[in-house]
Image 1 (tube, rainbow, N blue to C red):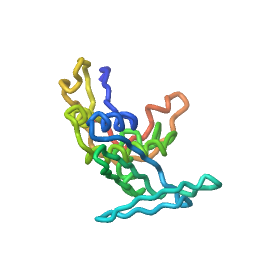
Image 2 (cartoon, rainbow, N blue to C red):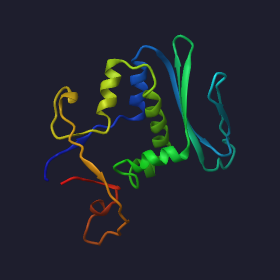
Image 3 (cartoon, helix red, strand yellow):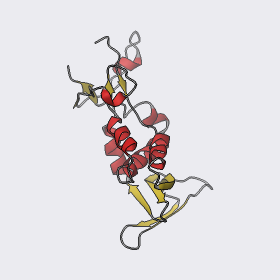
Length: 182
């Protein structure tokens, strides 16, 4: 289309900062758990979460990821996401097979848990506006980007990986699992 488009993406640190801005959150933590770590959690009336990372050798494969928010009134909340949930979210990404999902996978797992936690954390009006903007596509720039309409128009497609021809840049053949509607 030869037009410029930008997709707003909140980084992991952005989700943490937005939760702090609610005024109710005093700390936020998120970590990936590996199969050789000690980890136990339980939801319910007597909920608990305990994680002791094993840094003395092979940690094994990723088991889950969690995010915790502690509130100024002494309460807390947390979410634990299994690999299947993270993978489902990853597949919805515009770049599931390249970029940060490949180069910084642990960080993307953490971001996924923080984003899920932020949906349940106390929300300031600013946080709600920022969450509404996450992963939207904009074709113009304004001081208040919430005033710019979301132009994201994606459909799910099945595809297969294609090796680039020597004369063609790799980016033009990358498989994202999604393509814009035309």
